[in-house]
Structures are given as C-alpha cells and as structure tokens.
Length: 207
Image 1 (cartoon, rainbow, N blue to C red):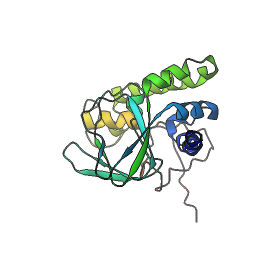
Image 2 (cartoon, helix red, strand yellow):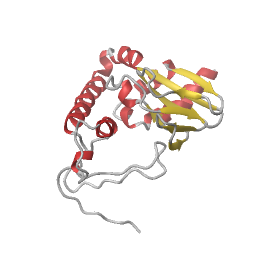
Image 3 (cartoon, one colour):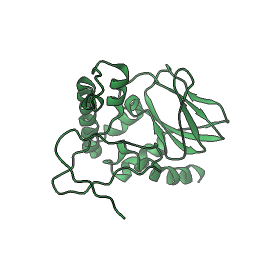
Image 4 (cartoon, helix red, strand yellow):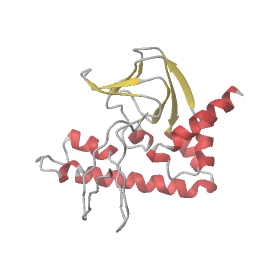
C-alpha cells in the first residue's frame, strides 16, 4: 500500500518534467513504480561534480542546493525539481555540478538502463522515437552552440559553458499565430530565459 501511495504521489510530478511530457500517463506510472527512492539528511550530497551519471533524479520531498565544482551556489530547489536530463539521454556521463540536501530530502531516481528496457515495449514506440529525436536535437544544438551563440557574446560552440547550455536548452517551435506562455518564475527547476532563434514574435503583457 505504501509503494502504491508513493507511485500515486510521484506520477504527477514526473508528468510535469519536460522530458516526459510527450509520454502517456501509463508509461510514466510504470517508470515511477520501478524507480529507486533514497533519503538524504541535511547537508548530505546526493551526487557530486565528476560522479558517473546515467540517471535523472527528482526531488520528491524536501529541498536541495546545486553547487559548482568550486562550491559556489547555483540555486536552491524544491519538490518537483529534476536534475540529470542529459545523463538520462546518454549525452553526458558525468555530473557537472554537486547536489546537496538542505533539509531531510527524498529523491526519486530513474536510470537510462531502466528507461530503455521499459521503452522496448512496442506499446511505447512513439515515446521511444520522441527520445531519439530529442537526442539528435540536443546533439545539433551542441555542435552549433545554440542558443548561446545567437547572443552577441563572441563565444565559440566549443566553449564548455556554451556546450553545457546547449545540452540543457529546450527547443520550442511556435506555429504562426499561436500563443506561447513563458515558464513561470515559480517553476520547480528555477527561473528560465528564452532566446528567439528564428522568426518574429509580438510580445504582449497581460494586465
């Protein structure tokens, strides 16, 4: 009963992760019910910069702080925040930062091997194709240095920071006359900023 309750609690959190939004709810539920859960005391490291990485973790309870390799703070995140998308996609085999619990924290973790095994089910062929497409899209972003090379920063696509930004940037295609609402500042993954790569838009401020 406890495991069932945990699955019910976590399924909507994973459904909000951008990587999994194209997935049917039945697939997300299977993922959640097969992933690993772990508890971490305050100030305990969940992972450290340079660790091997092949999984995504999601904060299910508590709060965490992300730090650079030098210990500088990046930000503090709460329930619903996820880390390791590029690792889960097989694009980045090491942790680029350190993640520490700032309170009693529970995290859920899904690794690439488990996800691949689940996606072998023919019923989830479309979800598997969406991940394959996303991998190629991110590889293209890295090779071109997008989106940072679109800005007047005089940076190279080979710059490490540019490549890291390209690995985590989400590409959005907005059809003509469609309305797009930016991610709210209250997003579990923290504030976002958007860069127009192609086309024209009209910005409207809602009162």
